[in-house]
Length: 271
Image (cartoon, helix red, strand yellow):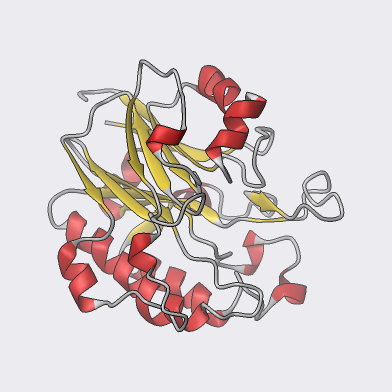
C-alpha cells in the first residue's frame, strides 16, 4: 500500500441475491473495479451466494435472522484482521436490545477490516421505523455504541467507516426537509447522533468536498418516481478520521448505478 491510490466504495444493495440475479451487481464491479467494497443489507450469508470474483477476498457478517440486514467487505487487499460485530468492551457497556427484545448485536450490522494503514468499517445503522419504535434504542444505545467502537479502533490507526447510517444529517441532505422534520431518518435524535460523529473528529467526506451540493442523494423511495425526479435523501456516508482528510482526492455518489433503492458512494484515497 505504498504511494498508491485506493478506491473505497460503499453500497446498500438491498439484497445481494437480487442484484446478482439481475446482473446489476456484476456490471457495477466490472465497470468500477473497487479496491475495497463495503456492502450493507446483503440479506444473505456467504453460503447462499455464488459470486465469481477471484480478485477479491470476501468477508461476510450476516444476521442470525435469515434474509435480514447483514454487511460484507470485498477487498483486493487481504485484511490483516477482521472484527465481526462491535468490540467486546463496547458490547459490555451497551446492552443492545430494544424495547421488543430484539438484539441489535445479532443483526450483522458492523464489520471491521484492518489493513496496513487504516481500518475499514462497513455499517448498517438500524432504521428507527415509521412509528419511531426503534428511536430510543438507536439514540441511547446504538449510535453511542457504534461511535465508541470506531473511536476505540482509532486508538490503533485511522478509521474509514462507510455505509447506510439511516439519517439525513442536515436540511441540505434531503430534497424535502420541511415536510420530513421529526419523521424517521430526520428526527432531532438521529441528527444528533451524526453531530456526535462530527464532534468526535470524523469527516463526512462528501460534504467536506461539496459543502453546497443540494442534489447529492443516495436513497429514493419507490413511490411517485422519486428517483427519476431525484426526490431523495443522502443517508449513505463515507466518514474518515481527521488525519486522513488530506488524503482524500475526491468523494462521489453514483446515482446512475441501478439495482437497489440506494446507489453506491465512495472515495479515492491517496496513500
